[in-house]
Length: 255
Ligand SMILES: C[S@@+](CC[C@H](N)C(=O)[O-])C[C@H]1O[C@@H](n2cnc3c(N)ncnc32)[C@H](O)[C@@H]1O
Image (cartoon, rainbow, N blue to C red; front, side, top):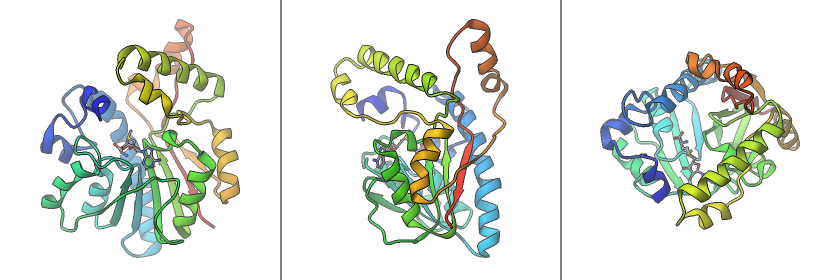
């Protein structure tokens, strides 16, 4: 939580929370400009068509939900959502989401749990979504198996805002850089932070290998991001740096 606060998260209070993901000011505005594009694509290409197919509001499970802003957005669109996270703090954990109650016609559910052992029966949700959270999984096949189990037939599992690399070599280099930065920047916290072993990144191949046993076949839907993001690959090539990741929108149907 100290790390999250140090990054400036949750610092903008209620106004910031209600604006997410359309944050236009503050230190994290640049990051959110990218994430807002993924979210818009998600609503347009995943949520709306699935609701149309089902002919009703969707039951959504938001995994690694943080403060639950995505669940709040979906609640505003008339869907029923459950936000699940390990963290219950009020910086940007589940407790921070309590503020949404006053602004929503129907509050979303909040459940404190790990996404590698979901406290729900089988096939309870039309849509299971990981927004900026799947790369924090430690056991990817297990987490995806749980997501698949919780998804009803014909429903979807979606991945937003997790870094995908074309080659695992680039992802490994990023992980290594990140570990070095963490050790340097968060001296007092580094031991705790480095004790966790999240996968940190995905590739098309690593996702396919982990998802296949769960019967999930993910497809990428490319998102058009702001120009600076879209030209990062070219810039890296020109400067001889490692290729960057991309987020995009990935989804798989539960058969
Ligand atoms: C980068 S934050 C993203 C939060 C939110 N989805 C968003 O879009 O802002 C990642 C979240 O995943 C959660 N998380 C990490 N590992 C988890 C696990 N095993 N089970 C549940 N949540 C987890 C973290 O606590 C954190 O809140």
